[in-house]
Image 1 (cartoon, rainbow, N blue to C red):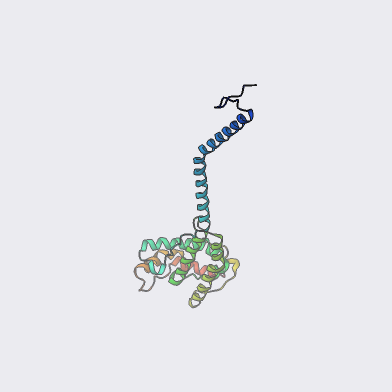
Image 2 (cartoon, rainbow, N blue to C red):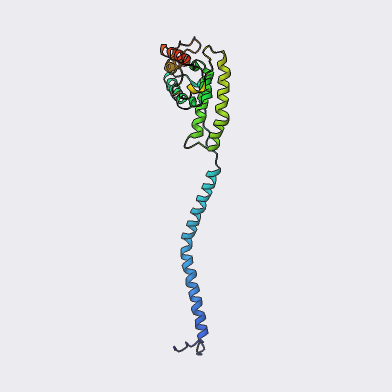
Length: 221
């Protein structure tokens, strides 16, 4: 057993005192080690908190609004209008006409009716916003199906009642339509609307007239 260390008065120090000092030294060593890691731990905690706040803000942040583009008010360039109308006609055939009631109520002369083009252009933009990777939400998609699309169908139905090409047909023949009626007249309609909308519109093309005649013979619009 080691000899106890004498104190300042020359008296031996007890083993209990030495053991107590050893415990205090060990405690101090642990405190120093923790203090050395404190900076890194604070940085880590700060990064975690910042991420949590960002995630929380992102979950509740409203999407940036999607600005609608008006066909009636903003179509002034023939080439841009032709491109926009081609995209719209493609979407009408690819998506809109997949809904039988929408297909039944869309007249062949829809391109000649700026109000119908405006309705469908708006509906197309609403669909893009509802299903877009950056803007889409389940709620927006539900609203498109529940409110937007049925509303456009109803208004087009009302607007087309005075149209000479309006006919009502069975859904069975319409469900497979994948081309918008009168799509061959996209370019002349775009040029008329952007450059001479105060003049009479161009007549339908012969191909579009033939297609409309075939649809009537087949019991469709």
